[in-house]
Picture (cartoon, rainbow, N blue to C red):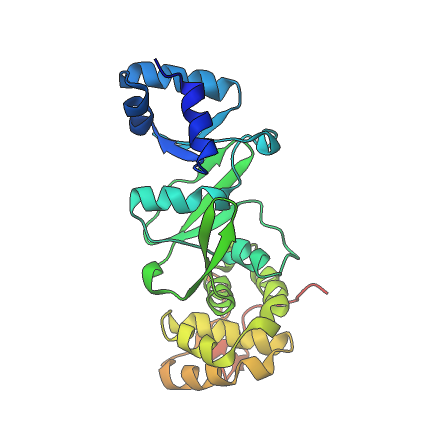
Length: 260
């Protein structure tokens, strides 16, 4: 009878580092109860890990200290299994685009509905709910296990402006945007902004100007002037400000300082 060790060895040899409990049971020719027991023994040895119920990854020696595969090497497969649109976003996407000033403590993945976070060894994955994930512009990045969907620099910047509370506040947003600015295409930025709530574009435009990215914000300003019907606060949840930005139709109720 085929052993669980032989099964994962054959999978890895074929270049596949993920499998489900049901797939393993079918391959081993035993019951689900017996399969789960065999997989628990492999997990105890550190040979496999389980980022999600019924979903397992093979952990090669170079990742044994991590206790799991890196998230970019299993999130695409897990999302495909669950049939969920996704993309890597926020600080995790910014880091992949070279803006690594603030290394994220969690791997941030955008999905359409709230999902519980994942803990797998030392790997932490946080899911952030965002509408219209499937239609957001993304780039495919190669990994040792395939490809992963990552938000474009333009979408990344807009998401940062839309979710400051998920990245550490507006100061962090400004710092990361200053590092992303050179990679932002003004036309693509305006196109991406048309797909998100207008206040995101208003905040991002103001922040871009603040960090010296005025040239990247021209098309964004045109979109804001057409779509913004009212002034919105720069910082949500804060008191109303006494100053305003007419260009971005913002109430300046917060002071932003980007790190050098």
